[in-house]
Image 1 (tube, rainbow, N blue to C red):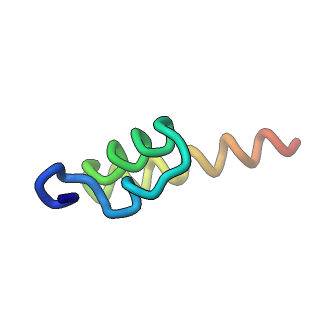
Image 2: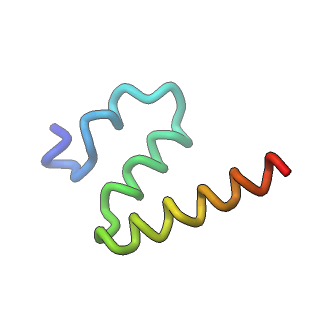
Length: 50
């Protein structure tokens, strides 16, 4: 079913809709955009600890 909907299997096991949307969006990104997104997220989380 995930292949037809173009979402990862983990999409169906998330605890809430926001996480499911995040997984589905991330799954559709090209590899370069995924790396950039992870880098940006790590900066945001790192900044939250300061």
